[in-house]
Picture 1 (cartoon, rainbow, N blue to C red):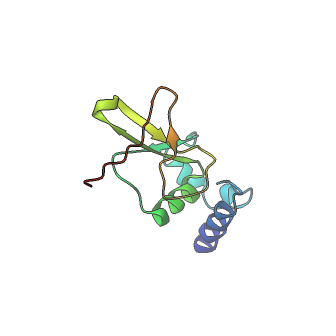
Picture 2 (picture 1 turned 135 degrees about the vertical axis):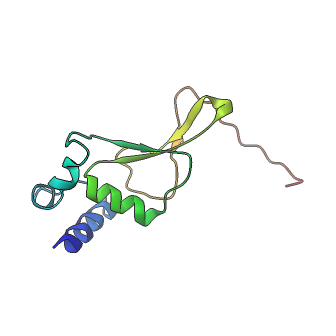
Amino acid sequence: MVNSAVASKIAKLDSGGGVNHCFYDKIVFKKVKAMLGGKVKVMLTGSAPIDGKVLKFLKACFCCPIIEGYGMTETCAGSLITFPDDAEIGHVGGPLHNVKIRLRDIPEM
């Protein structure tokens, strides 16, 4: 039952339906959410990219959006983050409001 619950939630996530499922969240994933206190609304990850399959699995199991971020010491940490409702995996999203980003061609690279 757990495998089909995870597969169902990942399929819903892939179709843009979000991370919640009215049946599986109450029956299967209630105990998983309880391991974190049961009140987690969002998770944040940074420092290294997470494999897409792992990220989808974590979103399905913990029933909350997981935001990926990118930053550098030079920019005082966070520069780019994904939107909480973004179902696409494999990017870190757009810049934060306090960050100015410029793309520049470097011919020797």
